[in-house]
Length: 321
Ligand code: ING
Image 1: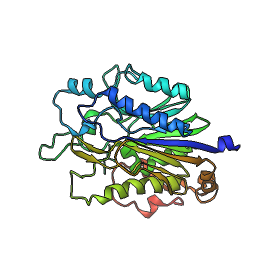
Image 2: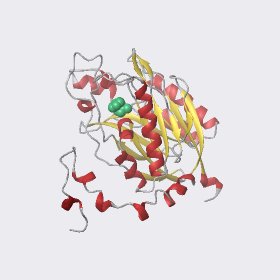
Image 3: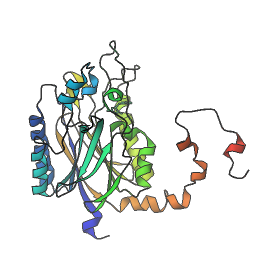
Image 4: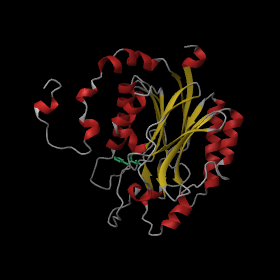
């Protein structure tokens, strides 16, 4: 692999809070600033957060679905407000990942992200598969987490695209906690995974110690980057949105599992790494040589069962009988 193709300059653009009162125009202005900064540092691609254009609205219960759709969802991508971001990306020759709420012409709603190449063409669209939270109103909770109310489960699977001289895939927030997400990508020979997230620091379901939010966020990125020979770039939207705090910790993680760049604060912040795309190979040729070492005949339950059930009998588990 020539040096030109071997090294990939990757940026993550963390966003500070987006408040209910913030216009999409003001948000796009912030994204453009960070795109410029990333390009000035030679980035080939910039990763923006999940639901980057609005506040994390699943924290609110709305009776009126039409109001939610009008206020928080995009019917066009790019649309009039986001077009300037695409135009600048094309001018600078920089690709990007962007998370947003998608409303289809048929009225279907998804928590969506896109991968855009250096010509500002949308190469791939991803619709979030692991939707956390609930769909019912929890009036006693300090805030809601209504992704199961406002979004459908994604219907496009995990796509890996040849773009920007390598193979890139994408997911969203809660997906990063599930090993199946990354395995689906590494079995398709992805080299880089881009993801955005909005992670409340407070757990509304039980009194989880707050330090665990950051620990589990980074653990999920590091373990799965290592176990799949992937570079993982994660962009937070964080800080206090109308008083509701979300964790920062945007990071770029190497296939070694090591964090090579991490945000310091909880405002708009660009972090950067020069990714050696050959690094993953070392692990995928040896420790995690899937073709040599994986044994799917022993993994059947992973796709056959949804929830945990009773143990299987030795006969059912045996590949001999
Ligand atoms: N947010 C959170 C996330 O997965 C969450 C929700 C936090 C679920 C912690 C479980 C534990 O990071 C989104 N948007 O998925």
